[in-house]
Image (cartoon, rainbow over all chains, first blue to last red; front, side, top):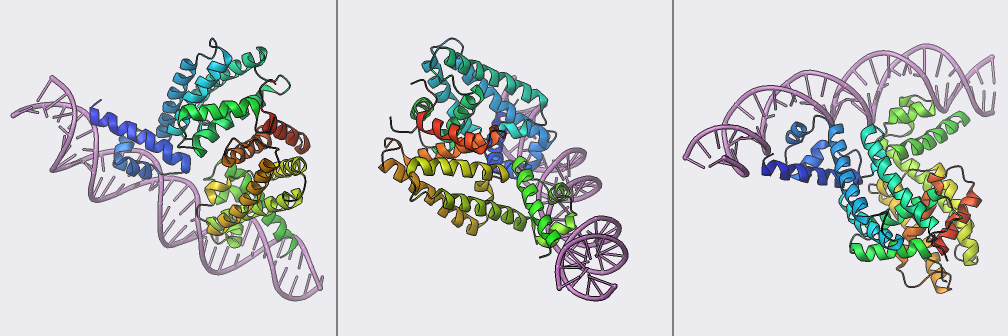
Length: 181
Length: 181
DNA sequence: TCCTTTCACCACACCTATGTTGCAGTTACC
DNA sequence: GGTAACTGCAACATAGGTGTGGTGAAAGGA
């Protein structure tokens, strides 16, 4: 692929993620315009609107996969892995703010891939419970939901907070809550 | 208004909230179909699609307002008010799952009303901090964001959990977190 | 420099959603 | 039972998004 084509492709995907997060019905024309290319250029790269959405989703899944690998969820000490995960996933959530769960209804391939990533995270949280770092009196689904929501809040409601500090807040709130001791 | 018309109107609004939550670009035709009425019937009641969305939003704001009143956020003891709020707002969030923040961009009237409700809740949380129930070393915006997210998680990820029990979980997690003491 | 790729611009056809109107049939309410 | 309100159905116009093709210009790479 030629260098300018690669640049345009990347810009289209990132702008697509941003605009689709604000409004999931954003037109291909609007995304193309935001990326500074013509609408037909996007249609040449992606046969259909669906294909574009799939590509955006893939890009997010790629970034997420990398974070999961680097956090070493299965081997590293629980506190270390938790913080590394939070610090890594927050920038991903900011760069690819598009909501995965909605788009994946049509794309069984992406859904399965996301399922795998989800299980890796759940396994980690189960280990955290087993090793005594997390409460065992609440269902794991709740633990998982809370972690996801805290990450999303820190990523989007505090866009200017640097990832390390944002991860501090997420982990602290996750473990200790907001009540006065 | 005739009784059957009122019934249809209510059904359209509730179905609209449900379908629009799953897919914000749901067509008026789909909403009408789900409500068991003809598309033109909806268009007779609401001059435009925008008007329908505004009406759905208003209905949610009405329900929310009632919860805020009944929780007596400004007068009741903090733990009582917090639990009453959570227990009341969870059914509202379930019945009107539509996302407010996105729809309100176009509707300055609804936005201002939501702003007022938001301030009532923020004032309550500030009082909770002042009276020593909440940590004072985190920004109030974070406290607010976490509470909102916990409510949303309990409402939608655990749809079968009864409001009182759901409120228990929300408040417990909000105050104490999920780490092992 | 030369060749290939990629692009912007234009033009077209297609489809879906939106919004309106008229009419006939049905339903609520007095 | 009678009246007014309400609805379903059909038909129509409009607008905007989607997808495709062609052409000349420009930018990248050898």
